[in-house]
Length: 495
Ligand code: NAD
Image (cartoon, rainbow, N blue to C red):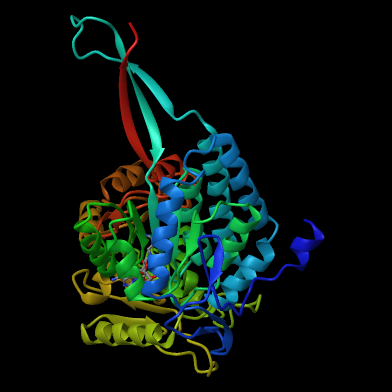
């Protein structure tokens, strides 16, 4: 790592947006104060974009795509720019991880995992972008027609891509949209969450270091007005959105009148099926990760534990013991094992769900309140409900707080039915010593990703995405890359 990179610090007091290769001060709003969710202290400030800045970014991204060098650049030259973008980030892992603890409340281990996942995929996107995107096929429609022809199947960039992201994993999610879109030759307007607007400016610095042409990468912060404008504008060819299903549906509606491509990565209520023959240690490990990671603020977490009634009492007892060892506290403290929720509104929502669970007759077996020893920060205890009816609100809604629910079952068929009785379909896991049966069950669960035992929710290049209300399309790896390309069939005579 060069000395410059070691001395580098992410910007915490940002006053200007990055549009058309220039720093632009927003006209309508003062900078927003950004709060550290572990301490409630002001961490920094960020500019708040508005409709004027959207207009500027839309014009710049359109111009850069229609008339600029980026989409028509030789793919090896473009890959060299993206390699510089990558190298800038690679040299700043520690500082990027530390910012995520301060801004999002992620533990260093969680932010490091995001960093690794994002950067490994980025590396792969650069490699994919260098490959010849033309596949040649013979024409077979009319063998008796005079002459011979072939079709070339050409991959081209989509055009202007708007990327809208949530708060809970800004580095990973911003990068997983910007990196493949840019590698494929698109121009990008990124709109991050108003809760975590500092992080994307690390990508801006990387874009400047990589010498991207003006208008190729733009960041417009802001709220609903900015999101609505960017997703509905006719100059945009594709909207890639990660966030809640409710907002995802709005984005789809906003984009519909201009018939643009919509890519959606949405919420989940993923099932963890624990069979009667499960290794309890694995089940508890997977179960605990499933609702305490990121304080429950993860789309793909397995928050719904569908446990065979023969071992359910043992599962609940062992989980309660394991939860006692969790240390809730400041995300920047290396001894902490569960950090805060993002804002007070998220904690209040979690409390409402705990009340609903009790009112619906579920048994609260662990947690359920704010930790008594922490009077600052948006903390909530890891919380476990047993005897949960799968049709109840706490089993159906994505709580996005550290709440796990345990639903009992007697047969494998019943477990699969319960797992699929959800409006979501993002992730899942089956825990069993009988791996063959577990794999057969996993294949029947209607989710975009699923693992068996300690298989991890997805390997780093396996496509990631959801069925049902969890989304449309895939991220990561080759499939994720090609979401950002159009396919052209070009037919021509050769004889
Ligand atoms: P959110 O849906 O409230 O907001 C997401 C983004 O949409 C923000 O940038 C917000 O400003 C913007 N937005 C709000 N209204 C808009 C509108 N009408 N038009 C355009 N943009 C608009 O989500 P959140 O609370 O920030 O994040 C949590 C959600 O994200 C959870 O549901 C979680 O499951 C989901 N998520 C999904 C994935 C995935 O890959 N499937 C990953 C992370 C998070």
